[in-house]
Length: 84
Image (cartoon, rainbow, N blue to C red):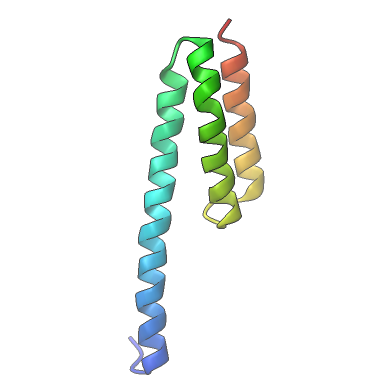
C-alpha cells in the first residue's frame, strides 16, 4: 500500500463506496426476488414502480450498466404482465 496521504484517503473512500454499492445492489436484488415471488397482479403492479426506481438508481450510480438495468426491468415487466 502506498504511503501518500491522498492515496490512503482514496483507499478509505473506495472502501466506503464499495460497501455502499454492495448494500444497494443486495437490497435491490432482494426486492426483485420478493417482487417475482408475488402471485397477485395488483400487488405486483404496486411494488413494480418501487423496484424499477431502485434499478434506475443503481444504473445512475454506475453500480450496474444501464443496458443491464434495461434488461432486468424488461424481464420483470414481462413476468408481471404474464400474471393474469
